[in-house]
Length: 243
Image (cartoon, rainbow, N blue to C red; front, side, top):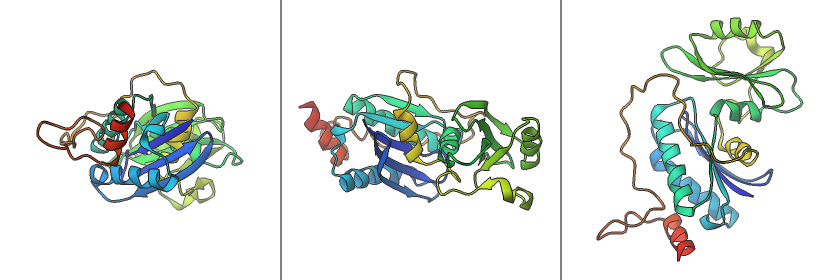
């Protein structure tokens, strides 16, 4: 199964192509408010690198948060557009679950990923080493509060994410390149292990305070009257598939 992964829940925007359990290409950026401009070129980049056409994809996996309101809107809208244009399934993947999956399997303990929720707060969830969710994503008011919560779990905990603070966490803080922030590689891999079907919705955990972005036209949609609609290589590949 050929899967495109997309992750935009935080400052890192990333895409990945996997086939089965093998990762073939990844690309990412870490520029503030740049997902809308960067994601489609990154997708075209990895497709060209692997030599796939968009119509050869079998599934899309997209990070659903929690995270940035604007980032999630951009990533999910793009994934939905590609899914609909190519008529292939779309699977939503919790972004904290992707971080937990990125932790090396040989490391013991529960996986406790956190992300910056702004306002001094953190998004937090707890997963077993087997990937099963033990505590649903929630907002925690501080690292100290997160540590108190971990103390109630009665098990060794592996802390994941660049937003853990404090030298006391050094021994139990794993700083993996793809477990510090959510990464599309794991969105794609987890999407391949899941059954599609449930609607893909963003997980915000708090009412949005950001302005809804003015998204570009569907990258795989039909051109508007009198123009090309900003056609890209993905547009042309989808058109080839349909006709």
